[in-house]
Image (cartoon, rainbow, N blue to C red; front, side, top):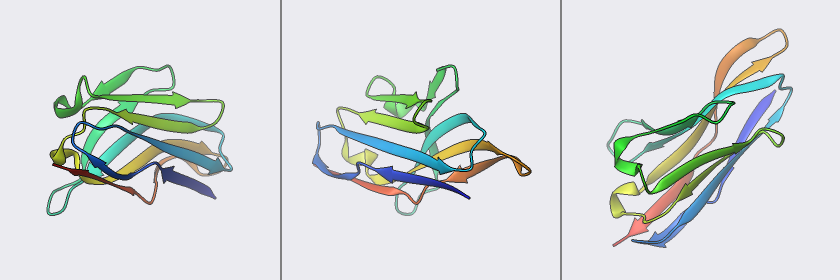
Length: 120
């Protein structure tokens, strides 16, 4: 089995910062692309940021310059540093990882989500 467990969400005032973490555990051979998604009430889930094993990153335009995605490959952990938060960043944030396992090949796994609320 594989588990992705997110932490670090919460309530913060506009302009504040939060750091999300996502730890992957279980029978993992390797982790390829890792990413953060978010879903606001009444909206579709959107990709916020992604990072490859070698550290190449990609961001949605609305968070460029404010959010930083990073990973610790030795710990199978993904991070999202969120600065200058805005009320429109309010959403449930999910991590996703493309994980290779013995016998099961490679597929995407999702965390349970962590709520981020930014007050104005």
